[in-house]
Length: 108
Image (cartoon, rainbow, N blue to C red):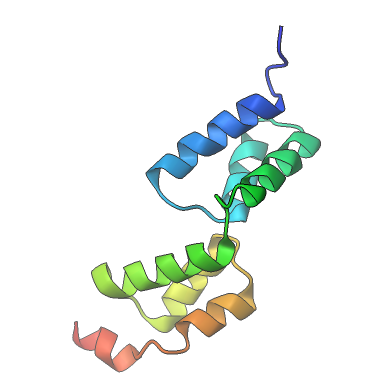
């Protein structure tokens, strides 16, 4: 019988999460850890997802920021906080939000 928390189960869980929307590496890591997967399985799953091109924190952060600006305008500070909460590096969050004009957001 296959282990309950093996790599295949971790991959299946990750694929299910990614079916709904893009995820950051940290979101996948937290979800797998919360489900009780061992650290080595979590890291192997993340490695495979990165190799498959299914995890890309730059693309995720860009998409999240653009989506927020287009559909649910938020201040630069709030979007930056949301990105950091999702595990995006502060430097990347800062770079992606530097063009947001809080005055325009306030008018919307």
